[in-house]
Amino acid sequence: MGTSDISRRAMLSGTAAGSLALLLSACTRDSGGSTGASTGSGNPLLAISNGALSFAVCLPVSGAFTTVTVPWAQAVKYAADERNEAGGLKIKGKSYKVTAPMIDEGYAAAPALASAQKFFSQGGHYIGGLVSEEAPTALLGVNEQADALISTCIVGNPSLSKNNLRLFGDSLTQATGSMRAHFAYDELKLRKIATIELKNSWGASYQETFAAAFKELGGEIVARDYMDVTDTDFTARISGWKAFSPDGIYIIIGNSPGITIANQAAQLGFDSQPFLLEGAWDPNVYKTTGAAFIDRSYYVSQYPYCHTTSAAVKLAQKLHDDKNLFVTNWFWQGYDSTRMVLDAMELANSTDPRDVISALPEAVEKGASKWLIKAPGAVATKEKGVYLKTPVWMAKFRPLDTDFINESPLVAVDNAKYANVQGWLPAQWKGYSQDLADVQPLTDAELKKLVG
Image (cartoon, rainbow, N blue to C red; front, side, top):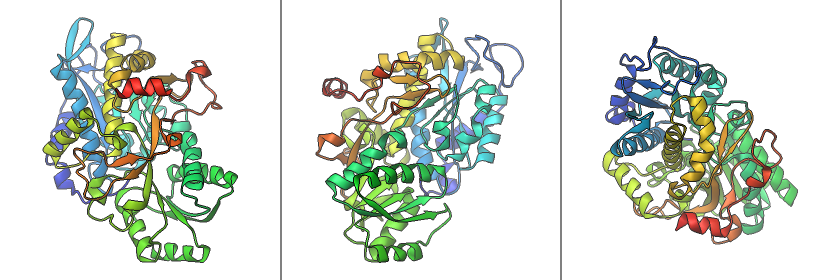
């Protein structure tokens, strides 16, 4: 998560504007009956309107967080375009077009809820995106009442709450906090860390999970500070760290505010400490402003964000050609999760979200070799929806002069202990409908098969 220098006018100048206009146009459902939210009741064409299925992208269209919006929205659009180029979505012997309209999340609960409810009232049943924590929280329960499946990746309260119509596509802090702590303590030899986090439960989940594991190893969190998304000057808080002599800094906020924090820390004398970074860190923002810290920064990454492959390069080039942007960490989650849901529709031979959520684990497993994030399958739960088995890698940022089209923004660290780490549900969580033996990290053989 982070801020952007991309203006609202620029944001709406291309695909986003057209998609938003498409969404706001009147629509009726092909499956009969009046427009509006409907109960599933086994209707295999529930989400089809005017011969098409809309997979909305709910992200901010203005304000502080639009730097993640354009790449993420394009990722969903590319997934939809690929399906259309292959003949469309095939359900019950017919083919349907897939569209990716943009709806405004506003990075807050109220605008996200208003946008989603309007989308539901027009016959929509699939939403991806939801970059804030507040947005998916606002939709909890509401989406199930509207028979709407949401695909999201933001941790915090939403990832812990009940929601049967959800695909959760990114690693969980509860599963990766120990990895970060061990890397900081064992590899970087850090003993005293100062943290600063976005002041919500998203930030708290990262800080507290890491802190508990780091303290257990013998480390100490010497300072814990907070920030609001509108903050721009952190010098007073950072100056207070000097009294504690931290040998590492953990910044739990992305892009512009995170870069400001890191640069101000370097200017205030923290010019050698390693940085652990969380949130939306992408070269669209840090490439020109991250010289003071990026070469000593580390990040828990999905596979295509820290490994270069021909498929990833092709998409990175396409995004740069279309929008003059580099891929972001959540570009890959948005791209693959959308393809997974579309595959599940065809497997279920239905667009009813309750049929699709049931088919998702099988669809993900069947398509394992093509997912760029290398997910070998998914975990179905009794009350929390479906979680992708998303392996993660501890990675270091590449130099600022890297060709970020033909090379990944990060590179995995050398120690295999921090590669291919289980990023999904910890074994002690309740609510599995699959055997716990299925929830294991990938073996080396499995990973090699997926990577090729």
